[in-house]
Length: 249
Image (tube, rainbow, N blue to C red; front, side, top):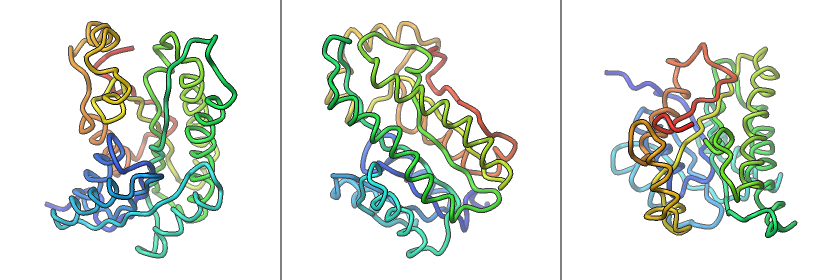
């Protein structure tokens, strides 16, 4: 059976762990050559590359901070240098922290907006030069832009921006036949949600209680949606925000 992404090249930002790592693995399993980007965890990215290679796939680890224009361009250039083209960009890099409005700081605001919003814009800007007809840009948003949980004004603000930018870029890049969509996960089991103490907390219990399918998400639940958006199966979708949260909204 032919693979859905045979001959395609994909860049996944923030792919050393969690959702990004699983997206990289699944894109590679469908035949894509993948640039596995990391900001700090080189070892994590190299493990993802090794996982992909072990299954006969193609991938390379590339360091770079998406919030700096030169580094964002370097990540995209690595795809061209290694594989000669670019078909899929997954803007997955993201950081989050939660704080009540009283505790919001300039520093935390700029850190989250620089990576979650500016980083997405800079990486997409670098990619557009290389993306052609049929290419797919996939933004990883968040269910928080719909759920608007307390103590998340800055983080939810960044993800509301991602929703809006997804719509703008879908219109702007539509004439070039480049599609732009967003996957907005609910609560997902990742290294991040573990380290932030979300898993096993009252927050988790409350969210699961409001989720029709009655569980937290796994990275694979999100990655399979990204594969769909990367492939020709979603050729008539652009500007869509796909809520992937088991019905939590």
